[in-house]
Length: 112
Image 1 (tube, rainbow, N blue to C red):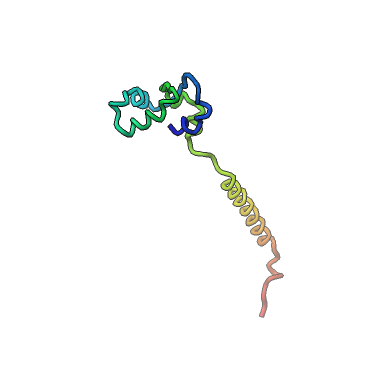
Image 2: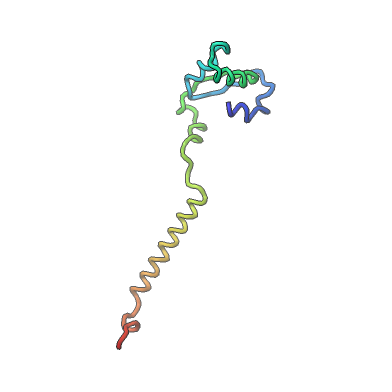
């Protein structure tokens, strides 16, 4: 329903609109007669009625684009920057540790 409302300007005036879904019960829900459907579904069917929808079931693994879009997103730019900063920080710490190890201990030896 969200997609039909969002893209109404593209769907308006088309004779038939095929909507592929991986939700099998949706076919039966929208095939019900309006007077036999519960009130909530009645409202949904009435809102979608102007689009002349034909609901077609397709397994989720066969719908590659939507399957990929529904998965967890990859790292965001902010997360990538944090990782890069952590790597930079590690290198900096390693360099500091090497510098400390290479210092001459006699120079910094305090005598009283």
